[in-house]
Length: 106
Image (cartoon, rainbow, N blue to C red):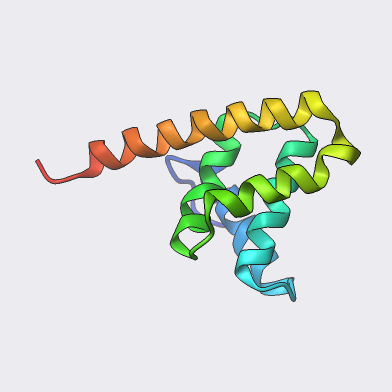
């Protein structure tokens, strides 16, 4: 059993993500776009997107590619979910910027 930490939920999510990456045959960019599509389909909150947008940007994904994913899934998940996803993604980007500013040089 692992030793208790101060962030057990985040630690568990991180471990699940690492395990998923190790078991998945998709390249990292496709995996991240797939996860963004899944988040949109379940109307995930902004914080869920924030966990995926940073790695997506680090791997060179563009806003256009994320938009293309939303366009591709719109007929399946519906207009309301896609519009909600767009709003949550925008909010997540704001969260990411705020975190980056807090971590920046003082």
